[in-house]
Every structure is written in C-alpha cells, then in structure tokens.
Amino acid sequence: MTRPARIPIGPLFESVTGHAPPRARTSDPLSSHAAADKMEKSGKLNRQCTEVLVLLCQYPGLTSRKLGEIEGTGLDRYDTGRRLPDLKKKGFARSTDAEDCNELRWWPTPNGLDWYRRHKQ
Image (cartoon, rainbow, N blue to C red; front, side, top):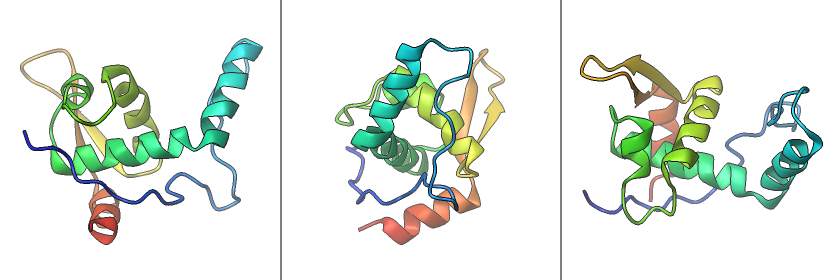
C-alpha cells in the first residue's frame, strides 16, 4: 500500500455549538474524563479523526485493524477502532458486517468523501 496523503487539519469534529460530544461516560472514573479533556484540548482527537477519515477514503472497505496496520500513519488498531465510531456518529463513515469474519468493514459516506475531496491537496 502507498503512504496515505497528508491533509490539513480543520475543525472536523466541532459541533454547531462549538462543543465536541462527550468523550467519556458519566460512569467513567475522573481519570478518563481528564484524559478525554486532554485529547480534545491538545488537538490530538481532531488530528486522529482527520487521519482516520483520510485512511478510510483512501482504503475503503477495510476493518479497523487493517486500517491501523497501514504503515506510515502513526496510528494503531486501537486509534482507528476508537475514531471510526466517532466518524460514524458525525456522518462521515458507515460500517457493514464482513461475511468472511466477525469484524466490521468501514466505508466513507458521501459526506466523508465530500470532505476528503474538498481538503485533498
């Protein structure tokens, strides 16, 4: 596989009100909330979501594990596994059951592809 293209990071996951959805459940320990706040404030959350969306548009139909195994991204299977549901909630990705295994295959939605085309260099 070729190295994925780099795309500038924009406010992909900012909601209309300017607040991102909660990163931790109310039942999670305080350390989880602190870690979630740190990811959001540092920009790492947005960067990972953007990178996973780029991978998804370049390699549609892969599992989160396979997307995380693509070299040169700095992401692992756990990063992609966490960010794909975020992309799905925002309408940029969709998943389907794979017939050959017990994993989900992920695809960009028309919104995800549109975002990718607008930001591709």
